[in-house]
Image (cartoon, helix red, strand yellow):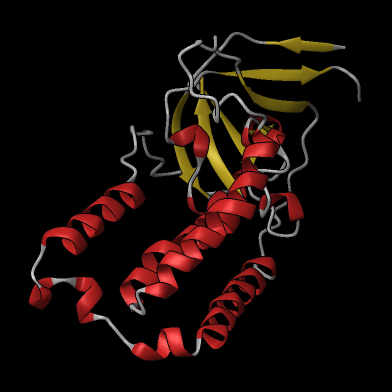
Length: 235
């Protein structure tokens, strides 16, 4: 039997480690299992949309070892600025309008990038593997012994008809399209200029965000979406 509470916002949030966060919802504290480094779904959220909308949470009041957890200095969630997009736009402005002596693309130009593009791609992919291994072997487990089985689930919002055709596609399909079409295009743009800055902006950053986004950004703490706390009464 499932029972859902009213829709709430995440009031406060603090990171415990790479996997868990402390959150405050409707005056109560919960630990949320957000980004498990040993779960392949954490690296491919586009293929597993549920990892972006619902998570297991644990009521702090029911934990036997709550005295061993430090919950001080939790922060109020703020409407986040997408610094990645802002940096991307500033870079485009620099490339298009700044003179050569101040143009980052020209200042970081190196013909080796294009001449040895297979090695360049190999280095980038190797860095992705290294970061994956570092994250995967992070010690993130904590003792969470609780009585209730809880789920924090994003409440459904009314979808408007003004959305574009791409946003209307299923998330899995959008993710696959991004992988098959956008990443190769970004790769071509990044390497063709034979510039380290362009390579970083158009290929390195998108790849890192694509695969490691869940370890970078905490969705419930970066927007004002409302969530339901679902209680499973089956034990």
